[in-house]
Image 1 (cartoon, one colour):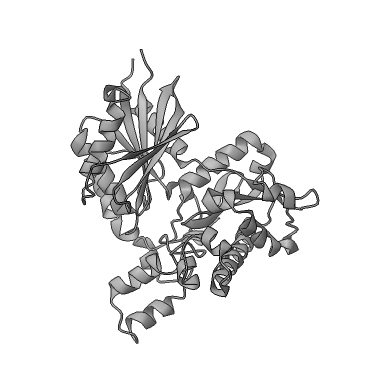
Image 2 (cartoon, rainbow, N blue to C red):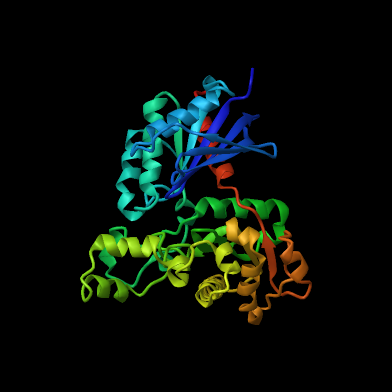
Length: 397
């Protein structure tokens, strides 16, 4: 009898990443991964497996319910695998609010609660809901489960999660939630396996991609994070602003008479690296550019991240290690160097050779703080959660 299969979905605002796993001995084993860029015309399925990559052009139209895209994707899988072998589909869901402190099987009640949180994550949560509904419509008997980006931060204290606003608003759910939790959960587990002495200490993890945030880990537990109520908060990102004086929003809505939709578009889509540079949201493009505003965008990015690392070190009461992960964190040594140069006063120094080669350990021998580069794998966490849900739901012998 063949091992059952598992599919994971990790949606962004304009992309869908997925992972394919087989469940062997109760453990998800990675078979391949892929992505669909929903901005493509025509759409294409990008797949990689065993070091080989393939691009499959899709005939599907992009519709609001995503039915055509998901149906064609599943149809492609059916030519290589028996869909009867699929045991579950796991989803990354960005916002779990206070309701979800861990993964959950998706039933009518769970889906309604996920959908109710759309106003708290308008860029990502609707995509999560569409994917869940699409699988329900196309494969109604296939179990689904949700892994929440906010759940990893659920144990943070109220002191950390509270804004200095009226108490009744905190009680109504206006508080700091934190995001990228699946990535931080993976890094915490990877540190525990490969660097147990580091994992037992005080660590700041910098998840730097088109979305960016940082997390303070104390013995693997989230104690503080840069993102707060929304995915806008914290450090600047590709197109998102990061921390912003609320007075700026009041000014735009009041004195400048902007519409709410215009402010939302500015903060989510026209700020960050793109807004400051006026050139690109891609840090690789900015690093190659000779324009001063491109350099300024990179400098601001590094400056704010270094400042946030120092703040999180204060939350931890020290700093034993700094971990870089995600696309920028894993692959762009110049940005790592720019950040760490501003942390020299904390005893952070890099080895130029290992940093330039994107090695796993990039700190110098004299550095007081270990600096590591660890690739993240959110899909692995989603798969592990899905298997745990399947075990929980399995009938007793």
